[in-house]
Length: 432
Image: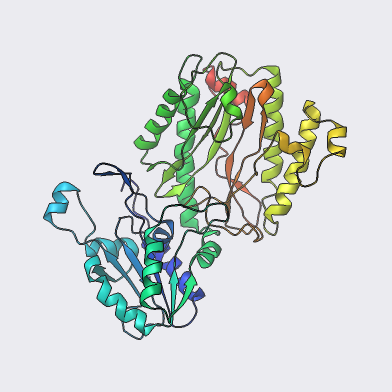
């Protein structure tokens, strides 16, 4: 791996917290992600299952974690299975985990080879009454692709129909929403790398460059800084493209007078960062662009101060909507009549600000969470208001990553330029 070793104490703590939430006489089983076929005999780059990584730190395909806190068989309360390595694998694929390396990373004392799993797991399941299994549960996403975990669920339901089956995701969501200091430090490191890439972009951008050339500058900085790569597909959107929320072609030429909306973030040690900035291709905002920019920036500054313990995301988004409504009135984009006649289910401001302001951030850019739980200290959120005026080719989004604490929000990206004047000064070679 490119990243520095993570203390196994993090994963040991996460396992203890998870096992405390399990019902008596239960076993929990977590699988690594599949290697996803690309074409021919090649695969897409491997990315570990977030649940398995959160509980073990094992960052290799064909790995399995088993937790059985009430197991009467000594030494089997937590075990892991890893791919058996040999000389041929070492020659063709490179180094794989030894048992000793897996122990060092995860803090799990008992490691077995994966080809030993069937017999061992069969005995452990028969000693249990309940089985916790881990599926990807996101209330706005359903995958058409069958995962290793889903195939395993079907296999166990067929083989052990009299056991009671339970979902691991509700427990993982409760735990993963609140980050430990170690996790916050990893997210901060990812944010710092992202900041360096943005600095590179400001120095590079000028009329005539292609969006994909800017994307190349970003990935250059990510890789040279030890990041895994992008935490999500980057958005490099100039001109009219800045009004396309999930624009991803990144193949247009940046023109004089256009805005360039950037939405990207480094992933470090599997932890995500998420940054949005909007900059003038020519190095200078027009008066209108700056007015819209400052409206978004004011909304962001007000919004992040509301990320405090006890608030619900539903309440928070309503309050941010009120701020945005006021800004759009000031810009002349909404009238008092628009607001008076608006549908409460679809407020008038949604014409220009269509998406939510914040989402959880962690091992995934849209991290495991329960959107109905009140905000707590230790949670990390994005804060990303935007205004998109398609008829003017003005799309502006600003986004930083915010740590919630009992003493007020901490902006993990506060050192990354965001004021319009600061961006103009950097782009025009003025030292700041």
